[in-house]
Image (cartoon, one colour):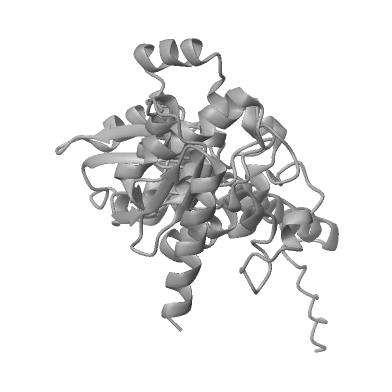
Length: 347
């Protein structure tokens, strides 16, 4: 008796069916990656504050995030929390979200200390934009090139309601607490908002009395900050500059020339530098330069707004960290001679 030939087993899926299944799972994987790993947009450039209370349920946490428009989908956030196993890991606290985050990034941030950590950063008065960019990169890890790019971005400046061509002068130096997650835009907004707080009703009235703009006052303030580190001299120096402006005299302010050579390795000003052809060179051009040459501190801004009433037209360093002021060129020449004698005595 002969055995019947064995029948070949039929595969569970044909080649075409297998292709459909693989394509389906690949599509699902791509959707999952896009959904849970791509950053969600924020409602605006401003940092979004959200408070998560102790004892909040997962649904309450999700509702808070959704209400602040930090997440676009409650369902996706719930799935992401389940995927992370973070139902009991999210910490209570007040958080500031200042950059777009994916669902999973947000969960990791809310479960750790990244968003709640703050760092104390002191920004010195009279700091220039390049130095400020380097400082923020060192202290907060902010990309300095992004910061410089935003400083000259017309659209970003307009979003801050700044009509200048550059942010320099519009970021108030102070000691700040910054979130460890702070991005360039969030930091800029914080410094810009702090500067705006100076323009009280009283100070705006003073602008009208001086017949000057905020931009002009910030420009004068930046020069004052470059001239002296002694706050008690600021209003006197301001008086000198206001006097020279009223008389149509060139300011002849060394800080404006220093601004022109700030990228040069040798920062010492030479006679040749005084001849640089630039609207920022106040030795060659009467009046104010086009804009601030640094970010002035509050003391310098107030001094620019409220100049001392004096008749001084000149001043020069005197060797002890302060300056000698004079009403005429003859006395100024004597003061310059005395300063040069002091310099020679130090060698």
